[in-house]
Length: 278
Image (cartoon, rainbow, N blue to C red; front, side):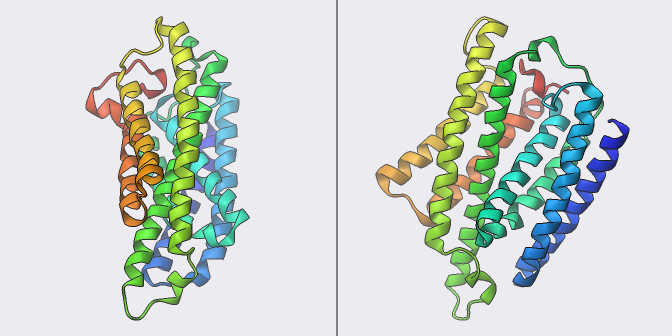
């Protein structure tokens, strides 16, 4: 890691960790007064996070797309930016950070433990299709993560609604109908960007490996993820799946995305995808 990258990375991670602790405290003790302040703390962490990415770009000459560390660095950044964007547009949605920020802390910690060293850009990555492919991949990942966060909040609020005495904390969260609609909208956005990601990856693969599809483990898990989220949209539109069933499906579906980005090496050990090689 570059000198300034290391400093800004740890500053961002510490800030996110403190914010995550505050969010966990808020939901465990049902104290909503801290949420707006914690949202600004996350913004401060995002600034340090962005500075770390800039420092790495200056040191390597390319955006961080290669390896588990760089994937986690950029993936976490997209999730945080998505969280800040929706929270800025609607203060009621700042509660999504209760789920996304702790997830980002885990992701960045995982990435730091997996080859954060500076590496030159591989020849196979010197193409415009890299930026299209990976950019839309992170858009999909960010949207799917928000869908998962909305699903978690839906289940928590649904459980609270069954109690005789409801906490004022949950009353300030979006309604169950609103959370259900958000789950669907985030999944649709993620599915569209996921489709573009796969199409761009196929074009890139044709020039790199000679065929549009090679049944590489990353490709296979990406297809599994795409099919699951596509199925969730079909179940919602055609069969009227709503509420807890859709929430549980979206929460569990995120595991396939995580495997695609970070888990393939633990399962099969190798992949044609350079950005997955340690």
